[in-house]
Image 1 (spheres, rainbow, N blue to C red):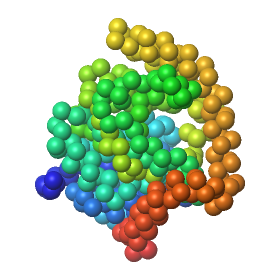
Image 2: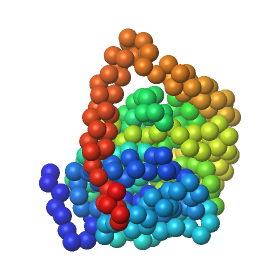
Image 3: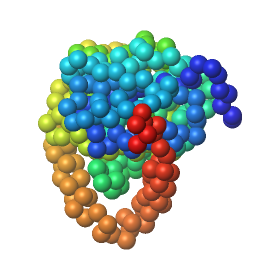
Length: 314
């Protein structure tokens, strides 16, 4: 389906930034590499101290608007602020240390146009380390019914309660995000809180194809921050989880949260192992990841060949 352009930006990409300088260039290039061109990019810097603000301030493009918080306000507040200034019909999330595949917007916008009953659509993703070594491939469930079952009784039980629709690669109707904005009082797991509050009156979907590269770096990847997220998920479950339709899975979720800190620690050890053994994986793993690694490499090559218009021309 061909996406029809309009005078008003169809997609407002919101990018909160905090000390992401090593990855910002690639993240923003991945927006300029999009096959879908009818977008605006709203960047809000959350009082960075590493040169991120100076970097984004150099961008010279009427489609890109940059703002800065006077002090660090954290992700929920900063993203809400960007959404308030959006003019597009759809809102696309984009984290400052991640990468979008060139056809990400095209496919997600087409999906929403073809499925007007859907409020928010995610996509599959590749989880990588800071050196772009592939850790896991995530192909999430596509149906709303499967997405809103936020705890699994199988092997994923130890992951704890989580909606399998990744916040960083969401595209939603603007009015949905305006109705269900993030709670700025929650510093961790505010996307889980949003999903839990909104899923009773929303329709979610996923495109299972990986269209996003999620770097496991920064504060949210640390054991301490993920352990803090357990507390805030507990608070959200107590407030919003125990409705009649969710009583059983909410009780199950509380139990799984007790195991979460241990699993986060084990995951950190696994990532260190992947980094140490990058390039020397087993033949089976190389075969399993080969196609996906090639796909990532081709996307990154395209992205790195795309330029960002800077005021100084560099």
